[in-house]
Image (cartoon, rainbow, N blue to C red; front, side):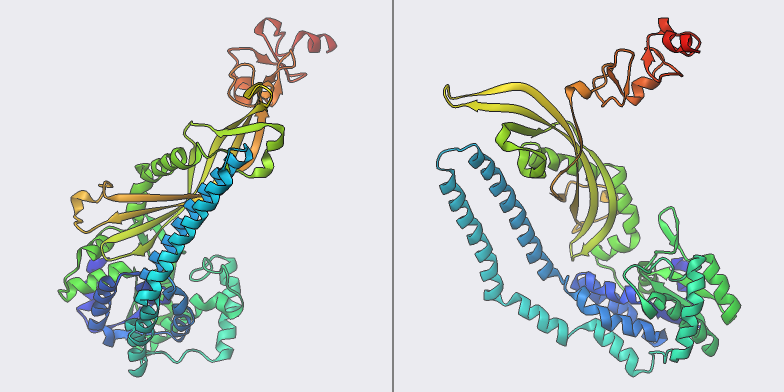
Length: 495
């Protein structure tokens, strides 16, 4: 793809259209990366055109994206970390309070004071150095992305767009296209309504009209791959869109992601790439994210955090409605490794010397409650021997920060300089059972069936014919000696 773009760039017979997502993504990079990317765009600026809808979407959304400006983001992270650990500390101390440990109220009060002091230190630092105000002033007055858009607009590079009657026609056509999953746009409707539902399709028709009017090929650059075909580690522009473009405009279109496009421009014009950009361009986010999950790096980090933060937290990490402390019930998480399911993964931040990856996950763990009562007259606790097991589920986020200051190809998969921070939501009960409900054969799973003695049998043991057979009549499991052609003796007698 990069060589194909470079070949096209060497001609004079093309127009570049950059999608809204790519302009907005520039705010997510560190200053050095963003400036280098903008230098690359400056080299081909005279070939760039902006669809009217792209201009509208950019100015509508750029302020929301800027809220994640890097220093602000760091302070928000510090606040979240402080809040998380403060909350956990207080929860665990309240458990001691429930057991009426002496002078615990005073300890809780002192720790609360320390927590407030930490919050005050962060607030004072921001105020003393006027960090937030400085960022806002710099962002509003010297925003290089806005300067680029305005410069292109001044050169007449923003398209006129369609009259409202034409837009309504496109929306009507879009309704049928989306129903039949014809790209673009059908995969990007979440949170949109009205005309906005068809913004991608309107941009697409603007590009087709531009190619017809100028009689030029198009290089279309986007960071939005919702409808792109995923082949190994790359995203391939849909063939049906290429065919539609050729049929309607009689010209060719090259669809490419933003990083491949920037890499091609930088190679073509000999622009030097800082190490952080080398990392971003030469190794796709999907490749590295897949590496983190395939090598169990993230799962292992989440499991380690479970053992460090959750196992010994007891009732502080579960929905309190599950348990009744006043009846003497005492809860512990199991120290068995939990099951971890990665739900979503993405790059959240690209800083100058590090990249932050975000993983959303679901975790399934085991717990057990014991009926322990305190007998005040003798000053000792007594275990009444009643146990109940719980299957508990939670969701959370894991953030892996990878330092890339000395990045090279050899250490792409070296995670020794990476750190993982994990946050868990409160665990909720999926189901629970006591010892009498466990399968009598394996003693591991809840028995949903019964044997001939009325004891519980789980599905796996029910299917295990080495230990008996399932009667086709009554559905109970019997020893082999009672097998009379697939039926137990009682059912055979009734036939």
